[in-house]
Image: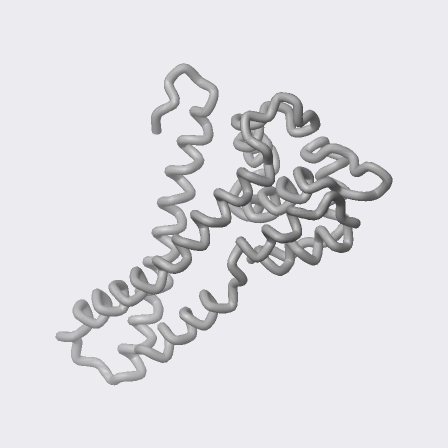
Length: 193
């Protein structure tokens, strides 16, 4: 069974820490190709220049000045790119708009998007480190559950792998449902889950 857990660990270890993007957020401006390259390095999502241009066209990002994106825009690109596989762009906009009302205007920002991304990346990277511990616990739980099963080792490996994948998907769904319910209540008088 451990070969499957090793495969999961390899996937987890292939993800670049999100904090690797922080030095790029110190630059005054970046060209679109540079923004996309940084986003590709620190995200689990594929991204291309057309997507970013569509976000600008749909007013999720302000237009770049002389084809250059400022650090706040880059931070928002990184955040949008990270969230777009789990939330619709409208939901991402709602979430980012909750803290920085108009994404096209920085004068109403409660927190600078670069600082928001920095905090987000630190928390994400910490939780990614916690996954190793969580994965070890999951491995033990699956081994304990299957210890009494009389089946050939190959079958036990497949059952264990299926249980791990089911568990990870269930956790992902649980977290998504909690976040979406909370997100749907943002801005209402009753901001509880």
